[in-house]
Each structure stands twice: as C-alpha cells, then as structure tokens.
Amino acid sequence: MMVRHFLDWTAPGAPAIRAMLDEAHRRKQARRGMPRGRPDHDRPLDGHTLAMIFEKPSTRTRVSFDMAMRQLGGSALNLSSSELQLGRGETIADTARVLSRMVDAIMIRTNGHDKIEQLAEYAHVPVINGLTDHNHPCQALADVMAVEERLGNVRGTTWAWLGDGNNMAHSIIEAGSLLGFTVRLGVPADYEPEPAVVAQARALGATVEIVRDARAAVDGADVVLTDTWVSMGQAGGEAKLAAMAPYQVTPALMALARREAVFLHCLPAHRGEEVMDAVMDGPQSLVWDEAENRLHAQKAVLLWCLGVLEA
Ligand code: CP
Ligand code: NVA
Image (cartoon, rainbow, N blue to C red; front, side):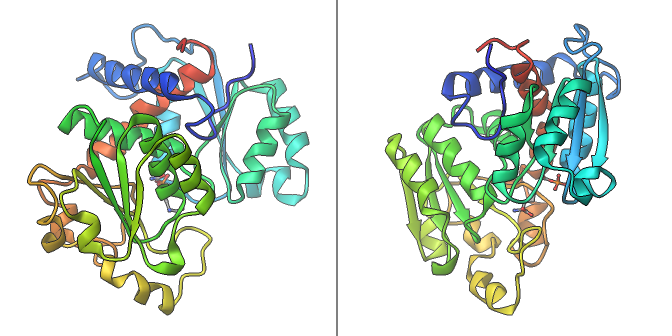
C-alpha cells in the first residue's frame, strides 16, 4: 500500500475525508466521561509512536496530537526543529529517512509547503500537516465537525470567511469543494487567497465567491469564520491592520447572517482585532468545540494514515 500522507484534503479525497469525520464523531461520543489520558477501549495504535516537529509555536496542535496518540494507545515525541539537527542544516530528506526508521508517523508544523512535500517524498511513514504557510487541513476537519454537531449536514451551506485570505482560508476553500458548501470570502484586494487554490476548488465544481464588502460576505451565511490578521512568520504592519479593520467580526455583522449561524475561529484569537469579545464569547460561537475537535479529528487522521481506518 502507498504511504498515506495527510498534507491536504484533495489527496485523500472526499470518501476518505467523510470516513475520517464519521470516525472522529464516533470516537468522541464513545469516550464521553472518560479521563482524557485513558486510552480508547480498542487501543488501535497500541505501541505506535508519532514524532511531532514544530518549526513554529503551537498550543492546540501540540497538545491535541499528543493526547490523540495517548487515547489511541500510542505515544508522541514532542520535537522542536531548533533542537533537532534539522535546525542546523541536516537536510529534510535525511531527517525523513532517519525518523522513518524509528517512528510510525511524523507530524510537522513548518513554514514553506515545499518542506512538507519534501518530507513526505522521502519519508517511508505517513507525514501529517500540522500547518504550513499554505494550509491547515487538520483544523478544517475540526471546523467541519463543530458545524456538523450544531447544524447537521454542511452540504449546501454558505461559509463566510472574513479578513486575510491565508492558510486557513485555503483549507476552508478546499473543504467546501470536497463537501459541497459555498465559501464566500470578504477580503481586501491585496489579501485574497492564492488564485490556484480558488481555481482548483472551482474546477471541482465548488462555488467560491470573493467580495470586498464584509456585510455582503456575511449576508445570509450559515457559518462566519475569521483568523488572525497577521499569521505566524508574517510581517504584518500598520498597512495590513488598516486594510483588515473593516472585516472585524462584530455582533452587528453576525446579525446579518442567518439566525442559526455559527462563528468559528481556529485560534489563537486576537480579541478586539479580528473578532470582538461579544462574538467570541457569545451563543453563536463554537470556538471551544472547534478546539476540542482537533483532538478527535486528528485521531481519525492518524487512524487513516496508519491504515486502521479503511477508506
Ligand atoms: N489552531 C491551531 O492550530 O492552534 P495552535 O497554533 O495553538 O496549534
Ligand atoms: N493563520 C494562522 C493560523 C494559526 C493556527 C497562522 O498561520 O499563524
């Protein structure tokens, strides 16, 4: 069998993504009330180890992958690239070859997407994307889970993305193209998502709309999402913050969405910038479910990558 990497949603494809989402929902329900460090009853990854490489900071991705491995009966190694020889010039290819002899899977958070592609090319074990500058596919699974829990089927819904057309926006656009929801982006001219990402989604039949007006983006939406205006490793600056200001998610903006609409944010949030407290902490906010779902979604990703979840 080909090594199953999880770098985006397109390679696994819609049936595998659906299987992962179903598995994540099922395992979440099955272990309700159990202590968080106690393994699931079937311990499906008993004896397996995940190496986690972080080239950028992380709270959710770090803790959720570690706990995911514990709950699946395995364990995780928490590695920072600055402490690896990778940080002082050992190549990605050689790092991939060595880790492949010692662990069962590798999760990496890095900057350039070409780096994770290279890691996957040379690794003999599955490589999982814990965020690159290009995308964040694990987060998109957790987001869809949270919306399915509240609204049910996402097919035919409209998701309004506000602010920066960044890595997270790319994964939401890709998710829409595989699961059949519309993504309407309210973004400033210089901060649109990469045209290739939009083109790929449209080629799959997806509806991806780009508008300048935040109110038009949110009008009648089922889901409203945003993210930090300055991502890790980005320069930011006054000009970008000024361009983003009209896209702040406020209660007045949320009022233009459907009455049942929900608010998502992958976190960490910069309260008072891209979102106001009243929205983050309000009844439409699913941000804490979304964060928790990282754990459940990643368990399904790990099971798919290691061939336990057939799809
Ligand atoms: N949402 C997310 O990936 O959070 P961390 O940066 O804390 O991992
Ligand atoms: N767009 C953000 C997401 C953080 C989880 C970043 O890349 O910093």
